[in-house]
Image (tube, rainbow, N blue to C red; front, side, top):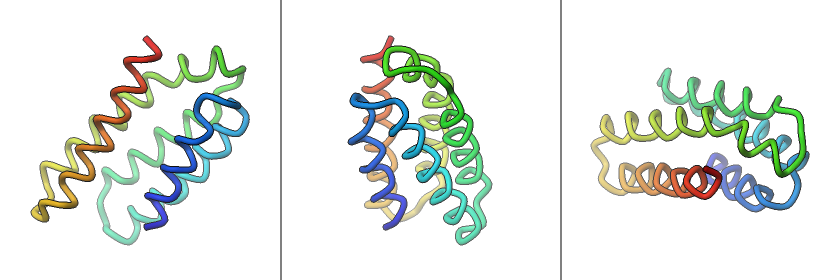
Length: 110
């Protein structure tokens, strides 16, 4: 999926360049916006908004990720809420894995 590709691209920039990460956050936000419209799920819109907000954080690789922690924690919460609503086990597991991966990022930053 395009959302999955955007998340992978985001992950590849996370520890190298905050500027590149902000672009990836913005791109990932747009993909979640499209998914929100397609699925008619306001939680995907909330994820898009959190990612968009994080993409506006100015700074360098030592400051940007730390400042984005509140946004990431919100995205984790939304992933978990969406997973609780999904009937398809593989989709639910994918969202839980995404939440767990983001939690590892947050734990590493704190």
